[in-house]
Image (tube, rainbow, N blue to C red; front, side):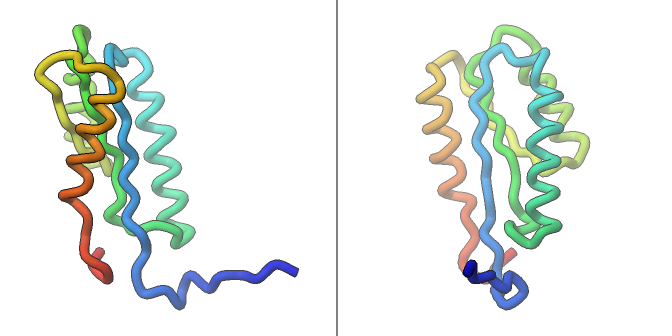
Length: 112
């Protein structure tokens, strides 16, 4: 027998931040953003995460128009934040920069 969690009884939902390192991703970026935004929307509707959840795209010194694409997505008022690195540091460094940025954006318990 499986026990069910009553999410309505939980006062605050966790805030989810999805960190996505990007390097020369202009072609796939809109598809990735759409899929991740849909997941966030579904999880929010289901009461699994806070409406303050978001996606953080980290541009790791892309040489194409990745940053322009990220800015355009941000301007569309989607749950998207952006971080641009000055040059290509590598996927791990971009991920760590994003995680470091997320640490300072964590809400206190009970806040949206």
